[in-house]
Image (cartoon, rainbow, N blue to C red; front, side, top):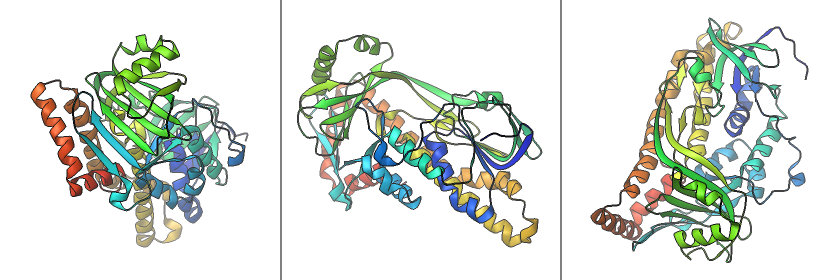
Length: 417
């Protein structure tokens, strides 16, 4: 849609139309309807058309994400889980082990009375479902477009876009994955800790049905995760010391599969096929100021985690829903305190009082997840003989202790924070 190049005022501007930004757009639907919110979404990458689900054909190489049961419940709340579920592979069991050690922990959906602990869904499918839902909302899209300048003003923030548009937002949401440099432009520092590891991600075929089992296997080089996909296929996340992944990228498919078989073992069967390989450096990143007056960071713009526990997107989605809940409460309170015709929606949404409540709601959950994932990496990364025996005993003990195992399962599901 052609847009005027003069300054346009919005209640909320979402920078980033990926999974986090699109989820926020869907979650804002009730507020858009109730208060007539003016919402814009800015996305730098051209998005595929959100055609009806039957027109979608997945590829073997499509990246996927592990969606905890708690996230599935949140998608149900948004009314889109039925569509999401069409391409979801349920995780019915999680098997945790350490290479070279006896002992393992098995988490079962039956232990906590659910059909699945989580689901693995292709990212492209999640994006298609989310954008199809967004197509029915009165949102203003700038796509493809980049934010070239973001500056605080009295009304919130002034945005200058690469398509020539100029916007003013009462609340600006950074959901761009932290790659745009906007945090740096605003002087928002981030604490970063490199794990000196790189994740190699691909899809592999397996010789036997995976039966909905997800594997987390710790090795001295780093964890290996396998997530169930449709058919006899699994998503592989293989962590390497930084630099070591280059040799495995250069391997032929058969040699790569042979090395994976040796590293992982036969528990999932024989590896029969490998897709396109991608690599990502791993680091823990947390924004020092996830909220400012008129500004909030979500998803990887606020926190980037090690993938060992598969909690990155699930943590981000909880942030999305908590933000919308906080905005809903703030608008309801402001309407109660003021005559409706004097309610300044944009000021209420961007008020530091509102965003501080949101941050107070998020900080404990975020800290717990970071502590858990970071702790796992460090615990299993220490190659001390006595500690190795203690880890093995711990895995055996955890598998035998029903209440502890069920508590861990609920945390993995994103239900218990």
